[in-house]
Length: 250
Image 1 (cartoon, rainbow, N blue to C red):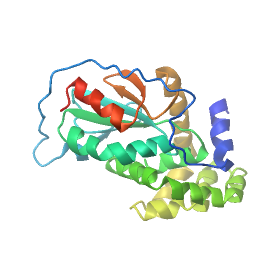
Image 2: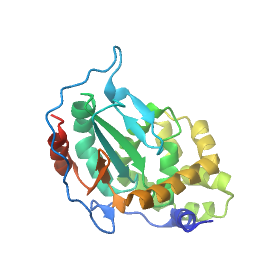
Image 3: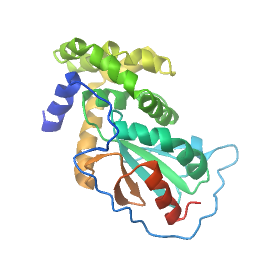
């Protein structure tokens, strides 16, 4: 078992708290992107909407929007990060409805896993159709305080889950923290959620991809953004939107 795997599993029982500071050891954000001319809207194919077009990337990120958009935004986000939740509250709606819907910007969300609960959540948002990934992630961030409360209320359940085989452990975590009910209320059937979490290889693959990509791309915390391949560090919506406009999104 590698070091990240041990940390991810051991932290299942660690207390969680909602903080709005960037979830990183240090912030790296020079905010410089290449300036471009204004780009005209690119219509979606008849009968479709770019904001409802989702595909899975080679990095296991979920790309919303025009796959050939001239401005490509990538976010490395943690589903248990308060700063990511703040970005979702402030930025997801205008990012989706103004910029992604225009066909000029695509938005890819990749998970950086910070703890065991984060890992369980990252598997659950992947359990349905690709189009459900972003709405479920947003629902987690908008309800993060109550999710933490459910986890912190039952620390003994999380501790007991650690002694279970991996094909039972993640199911026990979701059951004990109320996550099965949370997702069922949002359209993910409980039997389907259990089956996804029982596939421990797929769960740990998420953790391992997070570890590998974070090292490869020097992502030290969340939310970290890339615009057209350039790492622009941790941002909030107020700082990210002007960068999109500078790149040509209007």
